[in-house]
Length: 102
Image (cartoon, rainbow, N blue to C red):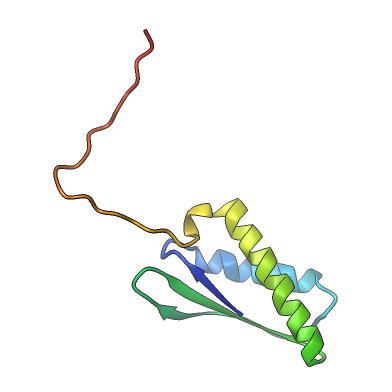
């Protein structure tokens, strides 16, 4: 199972969350729980989670559940680590804007 993330993703926190998710899931057979950074693309970092279950059907269900829960975790805890598009505009750096009531 692959996830595309921003370069700011805290990989070790995702690794810890993967372990927590699997330990609570009844389909996990406790053989495989691995998270790797498998690619560093121009705009995203690719994470791959490897998990195991007793049979192919259970692995499919487990992967889907883990993917959903990891995305929810990132949305809740590290929303900036989801893929972003950055734009650099030419010219001087913008100055801070402060709104004054009045």
